[in-house]
Image (cartoon, rainbow, N blue to C red):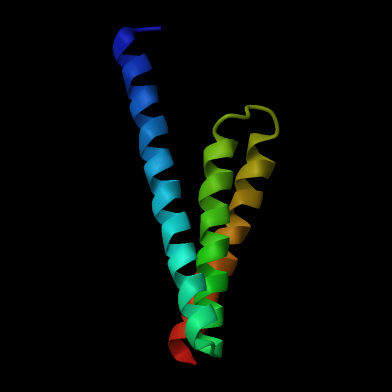
Length: 93
């Protein structure tokens, strides 16, 4: 394996960690807003961000597994669909 490939893989891992951290940060902030203010819109936003964070985590894990890659790719899409659907609901409530 070439040295630049190892560097690129390490950089990709770092970027995925940053992405997951940002997604979790949004989830925590939306949960705090929901617990302080309540309401169906904030509840839907929190649930949406939680599922998006789950999708980000599953995407990172999915790249680590080579077996059953197609099925895992389909499964990791479901949390994104639910998450963005819940965000859509929170905007239109």
